Every structure is written in C-alpha cells, then in structure tokens.
Image (cartoon, rainbow over all chains, first blue to last red):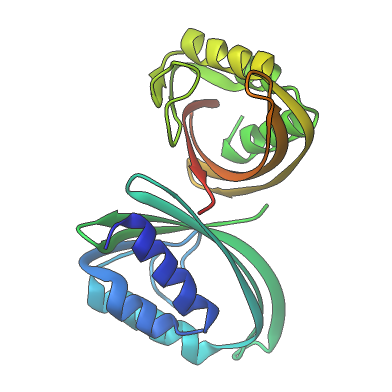
Length: 121
Length: 121
C-alpha cells in the first residue's frame, strides 16, 4: 500500500474504534511512537511493534470513549496527518475530558514506521 | 520564542491574512518549504528565506482569497501543525477552489526552519 492507502485504512479503522486492528495491521516492526507526554508509566517515546501494541491495549483498557471524530487524512509523500477529537473518561480517576490532537504518521514500504501526537493548545 | 509562542504568532498572523508578515518575522534564514506539488514554476521544495518570501509574494499576487479559516496550533516539542481551509480564486485561470490543507512546522532557536504542506485527500 502507498501512503494514501495506509492513511485511508488507518482512518477507516479508527472511525470504527478498531485501534488494536489499526496497530496490528498497519504498523511496522520498528515503529516509533511519540506522545506529547509520558502516560500509563510509559515514556513519551516508545519503540517497537510489541511495545506499541501494549500501549494501545493499555489505552483501551483504561479509557471509556463516549464519542470520537476522526478527520483526514491529509497526505503528501511519505507523510500523513489525522486529527482526532475525542470525548473520553479516564477510568482510574473518573475524569472526563474532551481532547483534540493531531497524529503525524510516516510510512515506509507500506507500513507506519513513526507516529507522533500533538495536542491542540 | 518557544515552539508554542511561534505557533500562536503564526496562527494569529495567518488569521489576519498577514502571510507576508508571518514569513518575514517568523522564518529562519535556512527555511525549507515543501509543497505537495510544484506551483508557479517553482519546484515543490524550495530553500532559503529569500526564495520563500518570493513564493509568498507570488502566491499573494496570483490568488484572490474569498475566505479562510485557520485551526490550531497543535504543538509538541519542536513541531507544530496548523490546518488551513481556504476559498480562493486563481487569478490567471479564474478557477475558484475550496481547499483544506495541513502545515507541519519545525522550530529551531525561535524561528521556523521547515514547513511542509499536506492536502486533504
């Protein structure tokens, strides 16, 4: 798949809330994942397919999603961008929050090799 | 200025349509500017402050902006992202178009050193 095909597939899966499937089917072995801040006891930057799958699993288990909106993709060359607007409750704290963030993705040989998240300020 | 301050200033100037001022006040000497496609006889990637100012000038002279919306910034580390929705007529062809694109910006020592544009697909 080229960048646009990977991007559209990721958007399609995220729109369905199929985050685990998005990671397992589209991410490369050496994926680098960078959050704006560390979370769940994990560092902000983690490396490797297994670690990223584990983060996705942790996120799913620890959050209740009330609604979400996925906008994009925006695509050029090896890069695509997706916007996520999410209304979510953190199960541990019971804290409900509305968050908007951007994901920047890099694609190589049909797989996502880097993702980087930027919150709206 | 840090990344967030540069980002907010760029959004503020673009919201006013002050594209020229955004470029002249916030861009570094060695700015690299990457469009999705070449335009105006310029290559997709151009380098250096003077070349980017010239591109901005060309764009302003060759387009009539009917309305525009600037969303963001989204900020983390040395990177920020802004979304542009624009309703514009290309003066030469008379072609009016509505376009949405994302700009990814890198900041170093208080100046924008790279900008990269991705159209919505």
